[in-house]
Amino acid sequence: MGFAWENMFVAPHEDPRADGGFVGERETLVGYLRDQRLTLELKCDGLTPSQLAQRSVEPSKLSLLGLVRHMAGVEQGWFRMNMAGFPGPRRYRENGNRDEDFDGAVADPAVVEEAFTAWKTEIAFAEDYVDSIEDLGYVGEGGNPLREVLIHMIEEYARHNGHADFLRERIDGRIGQ
Image 1 (cartoon, rainbow, N blue to C red):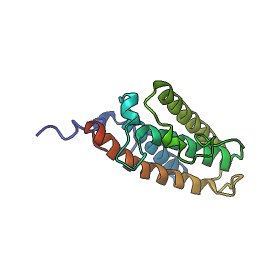
Image 2: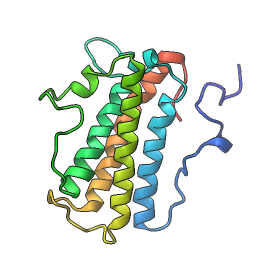
Image 3: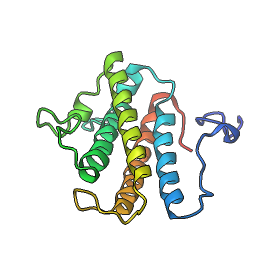
Image 4: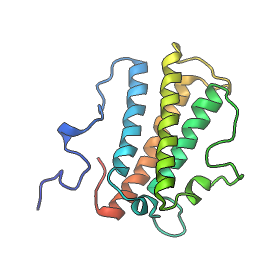
């Protein structure tokens, strides 16, 4: 039997996530959300477009690429639209198809690049937005307190990172951490 970390994503001393140790409410919420985002990125690291687009099992449409596209839309929906109040079509729902994030997750390098660019763009917006708001009790344009949105986003990523664990294990045997 091999070393326990050999089929995991990174050795403990190379893990970019903080895994706790935060001080204060803001640092804790922002830190855990950052770690959840990094977890999804780690789950996708090193895979080909075909592997990223590989679906779980019928009838599910889940794929790692679909999760990245989905989270780009979730980030946009909560931070850009709900909190900041910017109008516009939601990513991957332009045609009224609520499943476009998963339906459109195909093994095309351009689709993969666009998805990761969109996701990183929405994360950057969210981080800048959160940094600009001093009070976590601040209520955004959509009527939600920032604190609750941050907690919801941690929960959203945690749930989907569980899906990502199974998807990645099925692709190449790597397991979650």
